[in-house]
Image (cartoon, rainbow, N blue to C red; front, side, top):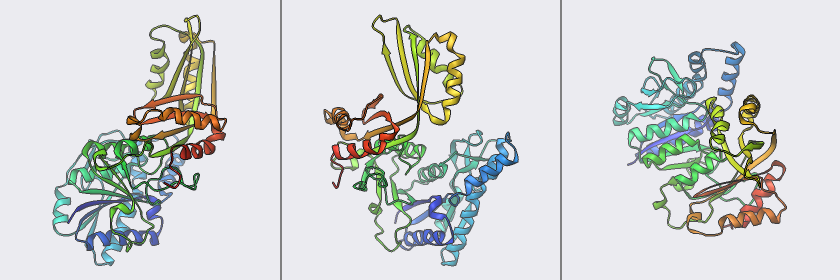
Length: 413
């Protein structure tokens, strides 16, 4: 018998048919004798609709009331799923965040989980009951409902798995697992059987949409195995977790590929400050005002002039943050003393990720040659121990991803 946490995303709960299919997956694990806790998202599209209604109600609104509204989607799916489970003769009960309780910080709309009291859940599990917990929500220090930010149900599931000491946390979604590249873009992309926490964290932060970054960080910190599985697969087919992709520690993977996956992100924008004074403190003067308003800077490159007195500084921000970032840089023009500012939105970030790059020389060279062979110019480069990211013209994204997928031997492997 294992203790499992099963999380179902919005596409897995999109309508009554999908809810019944999810219930069948839960039933399979219960029948196998496992202790099962379920975490649910809202039905696909519901959270967006709730957010739109809050904006229609008032452009500037109380964040506490915003959370009270947008958290209701998960309340609906938790109740409906329990009704279906009970109708299938499976003992179950719905739990909202405050009922567990899941204690969070008081930052409404972007709260962080601080503690989970599992006393009541453990009592129900001992009675062979399935708790179905509304994801994405908790209760703050003021006893008000809080939400964890978009994708927060993944974080709810992993946090509950940690608190309950679960053997595994299964994330059910609309794909069969984690792929070497976006299969809609690369026909030869294949499902990865096992991937390390570090690789999954890089992939999630670099554009892969399968798992939310915070959930992977939490799983890695507490060594909770994650399994990405398809809720669309027949519940009768293969109860093994390896029918999906297992996210685990590096020591659980026998042989490492040099590169595990190719990712891309279209939501990038580039800013270049031309002829900034090359002296101590200038970088801090550029990035401090951006940090003050919560604008995250990603890739950075600096080119020093021949006379050593001036430099061009190029960096990337989210495309949504570009207007505000430009406004801030314009306001700092006198202090920074740059000659002009150049921006571009027609860029994309393409990345190769793999823990195998730690022990293989020439990984970066292979990437650069593959792009050069396709006539793709690299604008900015960013690296870590297990990933290389480049900024290129957006129109070449698909060509770049396919070329790199082939260059690193991921086609049909």
